[in-house]
Image 1 (spheres, one colour):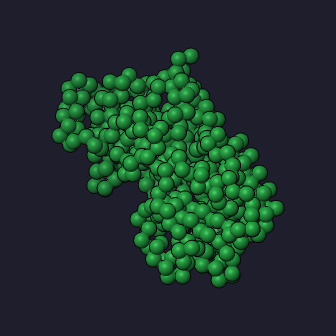
Image 2: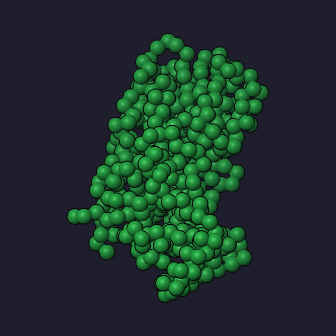
Amino acid sequence: MKKNKLAYLAPEIPALSATFVYNEIFQLEQLGYSVVPFSVHRPGVPVSDKKLTDLEASVFNLYAQKKHVVLKENVLFLLKHPLRYLITLKMLLSDMFKVGILSRTASGLAFRFFYSVVLARQLLGHGVQHIHVHFAHVPADIAMYAASLSDISFSVTAHANDLFERAWLLAEKVKRAKFFATISEFNREFLRQQGCNTDQIVVVRCGVDAEQFLGRKKADSPGIPKIGFIGRLVEKKGADDLLLAASELKKQGVRFQLVIAGSGPLQGQLTELTRELGLSDDCVSFTGAIAHSDIPDFLSELDVFVLPCKKGTAGDMDGIPVVLMEAMLTGVSVISTHLSGIPELVIDRETGLLVEPGNKIQLANAIRTLIEDKTLSKQLNLNAISKVKKEFNLKDNAGQLSRLFEKYVVSA
């Protein structure tokens, strides 16, 4: 059966913080799909991975289009497809009333409607049969209206802050989409509580390439244990809690090296906290953001990987961070928190250790446990590798998406 031509839309393609999007595109192309990539914004961080250069060059960036061009596109579309334009405009007005006609969300919907016309013209020009969108907030708004304008179908994969912090019209998006995927059972239950029809919702895990993470280079040795963190330096990642736990370990006389990889708005505060806690340069270091292609080597040098996620003050929290899967597949012992869908991947004392979010004492104790109990660490690592390969394998999960496309799009 000939595969459909798909469009993919995400906030940023390619983005260091959303490697799962472009890896999914590559897997679908290997399965025979032709994928046309679209991005809401230009990526904030330029790619340094050679395999992403061609993808970046082929991406159409919607918000990079000049406003007068967008207005012209709307006029031309109205003249050429008046019925589709007016039907979708009616949908927009209905949605604006649902969220509060004078609200900021309503004005945002109107803004995104105008850009959805640009996307619709692109979809028709490329002969796209279906558009799949990652994240249920801004990209889903644009895709939903563009699908109506171009008379094609759309589907969504929802993740984390698009549900917990920036949720609007979720029930409508679930109803209008051909299918609505999300990454965890936790999210599926959250959507049910928001009044969404769960018959339309399917869990599709984010996955990792099992061939890219082949194991640690570092053998167990009596040297100083190396602890690692990779993530954006934002509140929900909990890097501050990790520094506080590191301070506790130092007070206990535990020797370690902590390497924090990532960049973000809290970098200055975290550097200052490190100084205030007396964690010297030979104890804690910041490497800045690292290319995704360098993550396997970074992980392979670690003894313990820690990602102490927590809920941010605005309600945002992680779903199931892909970097945890990558660390587990590498054979590094992992520690995270009882939060969101994380326990579906990191099962306490089975595939890793879990602590309560924001609890520096529990976190310090968990790190010390994995440093000192090599037998436990080895067993957790074996179980973790098996878990990721079985449930969080990129190829298998792309195959699941492919079957959904064939069921809901090809057969339509």
